[in-house]
Amino acid sequence: MTPQPTSSPMPSPTSAPAIAQLLRPIDSFSRVRNFSIIDTTLREGEQFATAHFDTATKVAIARALDAFGVEYIELTSPAASEQSRRDCELIANLGLRAKVLTHIRCHMDDARIAVQTGVRGVNVVMGTSSYLREFSHGKDMAFIVKAAGEVIRFLQSHNVEVRFSSEDSFRTDLVDLLTLYRAVDQLGVHRVGIADTVGCADPRQVYDLVRTLRGVVSCDIETHFHNDTGCAIANAYAALEAGATHIDTCVLGIGERNGITPLGGLMARLYTAARDHVSNKYALRTLPALDQLVADAVGIDVPFNNFITGSSAFTHKAGIHAKAILNNPSTYEILRPEDFGVERTVAIGHRLTGWNAVKARVVQLGFADCDDVLAKRMTAAIKAEADRNGAQSPAQVDALIRTFLANDAAEKKMTPAPARNEVTPMAPVAVTTTKAVPVAVPSPAPVAVAAAVEI
Ligand SMILES: [Zn+2]
Image (tube, rainbow, N blue to C red; front, side):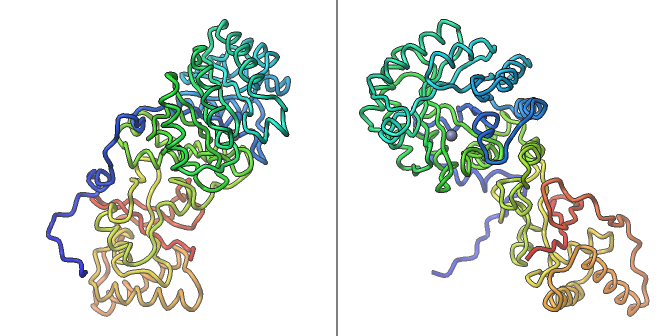
């Protein structure tokens, strides 16, 4: 069917309808607007291949997470090493607003050390899948229930929050799992944990398991999703929809193998469903610095396609996209970059560029708006140059534009208006590794047009 033209007014760039239209009815189980983040960058993240946090780095990350607003910060077990114990004690006593947890094996030796550090809570874990029972610790379910009871009662006697989690929950027999969780729920744990330790679960499986568990236990439900098959964010979201109350995250999604649910990615997902809730609850504009802090700490770059803070996350390139974005960013953006402290960029130094974006760049350079014919000639020249020599840098595109404007003025025997905002290449935004040159643009369409070089 041929789409019919619409006469409905365009929403303003900052209006909410474009996002609100995505919302689905939320059923009574859903916790999408009522959840807590347990960030485990300092536990799960320490298991990332290149992570080796010294004390100062751990403290810096803990403070940054606290400033962002996560409700919990989970630390490596103090039983792991003497330095781990000292760091756990230090961070537990920093006076952070976030509750500091540590993560231990279901073992009395670990529990005794944990309660001496001053943590507010202890996350206890034990493998329950047939694989782990046979090939790892070799214990049966009766032993697991008994060991869990001993550790939980000990921790409760020290007035800390207690979570008990299975490991590899999705490959654990469902009857065994529910029996175990019912038992620990009756002991009075604060949370039970579902962990997709191997990253095998999909959102539908997650929804079914969490919803089933919700009917079995009265305590909170924490969830932990590995990203081996790319479902970590979707699984976390499905868990919340099914009634999970707590989601484990790591900054940049680091962790064992290819990691777990990324904090920023989960924020992006939740922002589309509950923007005001997420925006009021967390300091979203600190996300770029937080991602960069952890990237530096583990010696990696923020991936180009990272949620929100990747270098291309808000870069628009194709001419047809650029034109629409310049008119109204909601046309091709579901997230508002300014809400996360980043800027959008329209790349124009390539063969896909469009004349509307080139025209916008002329204005950004401080010249009067040029006519469409001239803008189209400049665009053709940029495309031809890109065909001959590859993508053009911001400086090359700007030089071409200036040359055209000067020649045009000479032809008309006029002098172009003096640059009122001469563009000096500003420092690239912290989140981009392109040669994009973000510049301020008059409202209502705050779009930075730049001759980014990537193709
Ligand atoms: Zn894990």
